[in-house]
Amino acid sequence: MTWTEPTLFDAIEEAEQAIADVEANADEAWMAEADRIIQNMTAGTHFIGEDVIKIVNERGFLTHDLRAMGPIIQRNARAGHIFKTGEYRAARTSHGSPKPIWEKRREG
Image 1: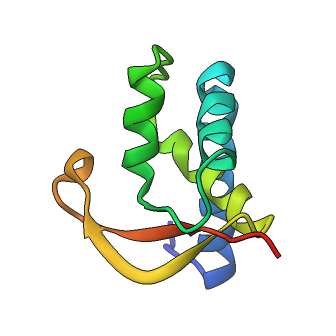
Image 2: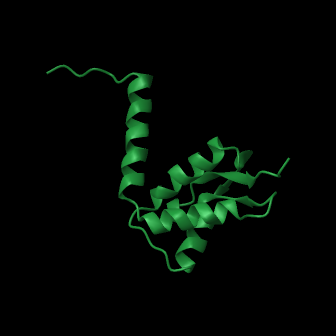
């Protein structure tokens, strides 16, 4: 058996599939509430994903895999609702690893 090093395209495809799998298995109500929270943020608000997770959970919505926040963030970024500030903050939910700080886009 020969091992072949994956290409960059293979890695991208695997990442996209993992994101799709997480989203498909996440609680739909949890995801909808997380999306609503981002949509209703005041323009200029800075946050990381775990900030949104905390609010969603405090409102009584739960999902088994918090990685479900990834697709929500990506969708809002692609739609132009949020953007990365270029700064990072340690996330308590992932052993202090640095996470990008997002900003809710101002209208206009």
